[in-house]
Every structure is written in C-alpha cells, then in structure tokens.
Amino acid sequence: MERRDFLKQSAFTAAAAASARLASATPTQPIARRQLGKTSEHLSIIGFGGIVVMDETPGQSKNIVAEAVDRGINYFDIAPSYGNAQERLGPALAPYRKNCFLACKTEGRMKGDSRKQLEESLRLLKTDHVDLYQFHALTKMSDLDKVLGPGGAMETMEAAKREGKIRYIGFSVHSAETAVAAMDRYNFDTVLFPVNFVLFSQAKFGPQILKKAQEKGMGILALKAMAKTTWPASEKKNHPEPKCWYQPAAYPNEATLGLRWTLGHPITAALPPGDGKYFRLAMDVAQNYKPLEPHEETALLSGAAGAEPIFRLGNDV
Image 1 (cartoon, rainbow, N blue to C red):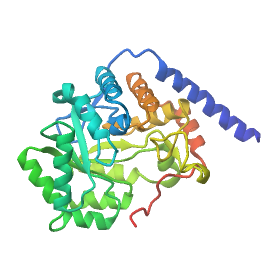
Image 2: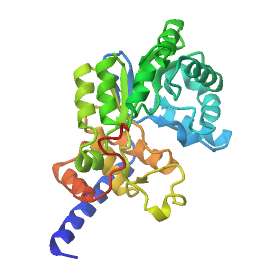
Image 3: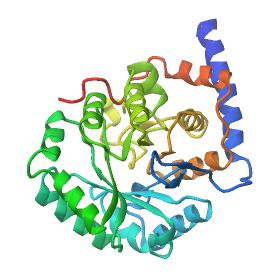
Image 4: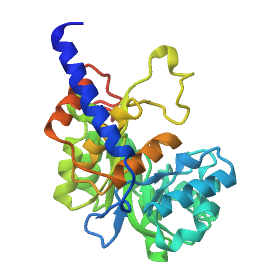
C-alpha cells in the first residue's frame, strides 16, 4: 500500500471509530424531530422502514415497533411491495397509531390500480387513513406522464385526500431528472430520494433534487444514507444482507459516518436499511446525533472514492 493510501485509510479508520463510539454511547434523550416542509408535522429524524418487519413473526414485529416508539420514532414508512410488511406493521403499530405519522406508497400508475392498492393498504395497516401517500419509485418520465395524465393515479390521490383517507401527497424517486420534472409539474408535499455520500460525491446524484425541493419548500425525506455500492456480480443473488439489494456501508463505523453525513443536510428524516442491526444503529446515532466534523467528512468521502454508485444520472430510461 502506498503511503498516501495508507494515510487516507488511517484517517478514515480513526474517524469511523470515533463515530461508532458516539453512536454506541448511552442514549440520553429521545430522537429529535424536524418540521416536514411547509406542513405543521414534526417527524423523528430517523424513520421506521417497513422492511424491518418483513418476514418477522408477529411477536418480533410488535417488539421492534414498541422499541422504536419508546425511543422517539414517530415516522413509519411502508409499501405494498415489501412482502408481508403491511400485515406485520398494521397490528404492531395499532396501539400507537394516533401519535404516529404513517406513510404508504402505491406502484399503481392509473386511477383504478392505485385505488385498489390504497384500499388494501388501509385494510392491512388497520387504519382509516395514511398521513402521506406516495407514488412509489417514480423513475421513468413515462410513469410521471401516466400518473399526472387523464385517468392517472393522481386522480386517486386527490379524491382520497378529499375523502380524508390521505393527508399529504408525495413521491419516491431514483431518477434526478424525473424528480425535478415532477416537482415542476405538481405541487407535491414531499419527496423521498437518496441522500448518500457516495451518490453525491461520485455520481453528482441528489444535489439537484435537494436544491429543487428546498426551492419548493417541500418536506425532504432521505433514502440510502447507509448505502455504499453495488454487490459484486458473484454476490448479487447470494449476499449476507437479504434485506438490502445494495451493499450497505461497513457496519458500524462507515454506516454511522454515512448517516451522520445525511442528517447534516437540510432533510426532515432518513430511512435506514431494513436490516434490524442497521435500524438499531441508526436509532443510536439519532439519539446521540452530532454533525460531522470536517476531518470526519474528509475521511468518509475519501472512502467513497472509486465506489460504484447504486444510481447514476440518466436513470429515467
């Protein structure tokens, strides 16, 4: 190893170890909350991603939801595509529902299929409304045209809002181009997208979405804070993180730095990976959160150099 690379690695190791010690310190306060855009809602800076309870037993699901609420989590996010997660989250969240902000999604692009998904989600989640309903993975420009066009899913959204079945309208996205176009074409309440140290530094993916959302005064919700890169071809079908389709940042050191980096941006909340150990690490980080020091950010971004981003500009194909 060349001396320059050795020094970079040493700096990263030192910064990551310090960050991990911070994350594992005894929590002294509940998880902080931030305002959601122009709304009057205040969400925990860490959200509970529904994949956490996917394929867990009802008892395990109730325990992790209770732990999250006890530690200050009030933001829960779920989607029909997360296996049996809705079935698990509904009963587990029921005792706390009135004090929590529940976000759900639809993959439906037209009025009929999105309405069907909404009604099924309400049934499984054992609630009469969701606080935020989002177009899921609004990646292609053709999808945006469908949902906003005649007979599109936006008609379901607006009707459901009038009926009191949803309160806010948003979208999740993995394309910078489609995200900016969506915000130009409709007055969405929120956007859910990757805010990640590798994507921002190596692919320039995300800053343009963040800038546009701030200009619009939208609620900004972050994905992939603890992501690192793609799985090697040899591990794509058989890797050690079954709830992560991407390769997460190294646990716990790099993941801790990555989450703190994301929380240092003007976002409301971040959703960590669905793996239980990463979710609990995220709660630890949030309860002891401090912005990155300059040397910690330098070390983190040095470690991102050369990593293959999980998304790139031009994903709207």
